[in-house]
Length: 82
Image (cartoon, rainbow, N blue to C red; front, side, top):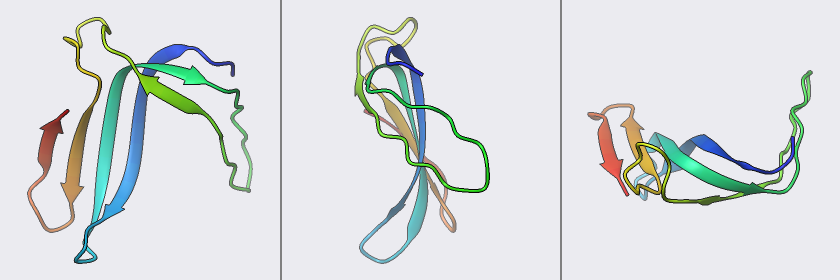
């Protein structure tokens, strides 16, 4: 896949100073990718090296660069906007 512009979704894990682990979901309505990568299928893990820059001006995004939601195991879900 070659670089270009598209929406980007990122699922990640984060740990706070008290060792609580949270799942975080980032949504970037318009991202400009650089680098090349392919999708590999099979039994082995694959590392994809690329960079993306959040851009404003995505249709319907209202100038938002990104939003994120934090999900906690024993806490109420928290939604946030950047």
